[in-house]
Image 1 (cartoon, helix red, strand yellow):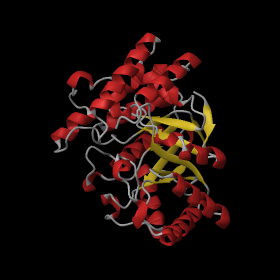
Image 2 (image 1 turned 90 degrees about the vertical axis):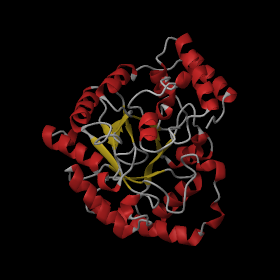
Image 3 (image 1 turned 60 degrees about the vertical axis):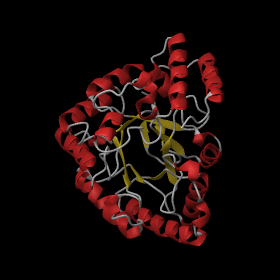
Image 4 (image 1 turned 90 degrees about the horizontal axis):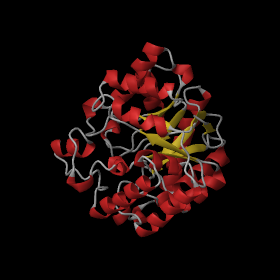
Length: 352
């Protein structure tokens, strides 16, 4: 497993990250420990979490449970110096902060709480899960309206939060800072203010990115290349669509779609499961077969061909799923397959 640095920071991580958002709910503690053991054995040292996890669904009473599972694993194994841990402060739309925007005081309070749950003295990457001014992530791009934003209020908020992050870095509680579900304008402003105030520069941005969802490819990619920011790509398998398990009307038991339906949702994977998306998946599955690839490995390997820094975040609800993923992660795409993927992208643009 190759190693990469997050942006311009001194934090070095594995080129693939293990996501932990199901730990403590869909993934019971013993299985989660087995997953982290297996990932570390395969060279994956980078773990991503958030205070609001586990998901599916998000509940006030389970907030922090995924961090607690990581903490119990660290305590059991003594592996803290062998891994890099990323976590996030919850955004204003979520229950962890009582539906209120976070500020520097919340940053301090939530970092301390995460450190306690994780049973560690430091967080390698601390991320802002959602912009307080709003976001176009999770299918909000179709109706996105930034006209109500107050520029000065946003800039004042950024100054305040960066003060909190700078204090945490100085105290040795975090090593680097990052964003999630951010825009090109937001990323640029965070960096500009950090440069002006000697606060920590954003080293990474965690946004959705997959063969089916490529909003990052233009403005955000340009900012990231010029400002040396690494994309942490969540949902590289499009919430499981790219595995093919939802084709032909299938809804596997214990899948995300099945659990969503069972808990009162509509089971469309957060708006991802559309007819156009299923058509696109069929095309990618066919392409993978023609080139002798497992579609899961092709979807992850494609990310590493992009013309910007990217670390895909893989996730699995069970050790068996992870064991299917791990063997193909060192395989690299050839140019012919990469070009064929480009052609399919043009034929199936933004299918959800």
